[in-house]
Length: 434
Picture 1 (spheres, rainbow, N blue to C red):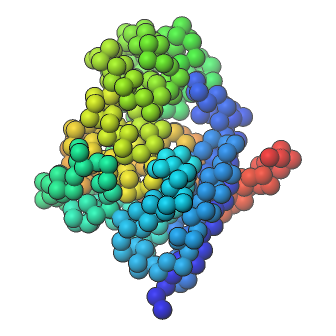
Picture 2 (cartoon, rainbow, N blue to C red):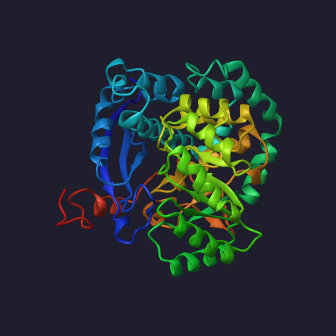
Picture 3 (cartoon, rainbow, N blue to C red):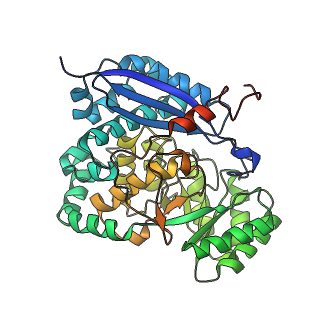
């Protein structure tokens, strides 16, 4: 009998980032970065790990959603699962009873993403390669087989996707070599959390410049006068030669967004992120038209490839921001990356959360190696905390992510960190209760 998946264990892990207001923004003033962390285990001792990201209360709901997927995963032959990752993903997505809870959105979709990503981590570990390499080395036809083109074919079908990948294939080796030599540009979000004082903002912006970051992002949306003041501080510290972006985290309506962005446009914004509801495609298109040439970025809360399709096709976005743990895992992110390539839009991933930097670096590197384009047009978010809890944390130098060399998806969390931060009885939370 072939080896099988014998276990799928989710754990509720939470970090008390609200105590220092790390991660604070206009919509999420006191987040506790959290992971609904899942381990897939095989009968012969291999394992794969991944997680869905939340910001505290409700993380337990995602854990239960992961448990609801167990019947479709445990007992599956490993060769069958890893040999056809497209079919595995579709099997979870089209479970008719669980699909009713979405479809393809919300808690269940994020839970599927955690399990699919854990399977990719397992596959890359068994192959002995980092995920970015395991994914970008696949033949174009195998990459196309990962994607669910249902609801995309009016804009992008399998033949078009294959053509995009085949055109880039002859120069993949050269791009992989450049990636290993130079890394991928990063941008700094850590200076700009909304709850930080002006002095802390200025100090952290100066540190970002020293560390080699060319782009700094600030959270905005609390008070327009405060935002003008904070943008002025950041611009003065980083200087005119570096880039400044802002992130409203969905707090504005369409008219408010237009007015607010016009107030901030004097600071030469590289982009304005999440100016309104992630579901409001019409709103994004209206804002983008009204504030041009200020670029609009969005994606971290976009729930699936179908909404991404609409944002791109209807002119609602200039910068596509994928998230490794929001949609249904690697497969759906491959679809979104292909859509962005079709529309000629840069993919600049979101990574503001525990473990998201570790994961999404692989997807950005896959994007560059498999689809080509300008390496410096890609920039991946970086936050400077919680990396110590991972066995293979991100490595940066001079403001660039270095390509991971360790096998897997960089998702393996240290056992001591899990034990200490397990909710509600880990040492960090002892006495606080649910």
